[in-house]
Length: 67
Image 1 (cartoon, rainbow, N blue to C red):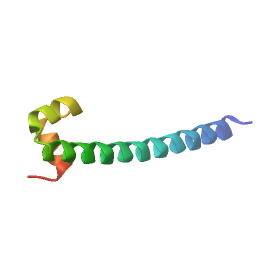
Image 2: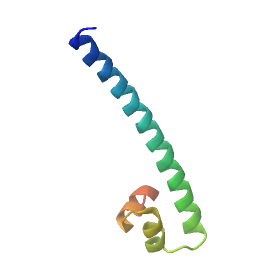
Image 3: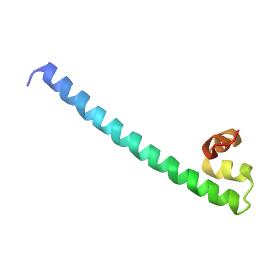
């Protein structure tokens, strides 16, 4: 196999891994959003949600779709 063919093969493999990782990230963010909404409804302060989620308070606001 030529260097060109190996490189193309490696690029395709990497692109496939990236696509899978992006899908998993979207799924994880959706789950995190749902859980943070549940936490907010349960009365957990946003600062605590942010700390537990590893986000800033602004990150929680963004995640929940608030200004």
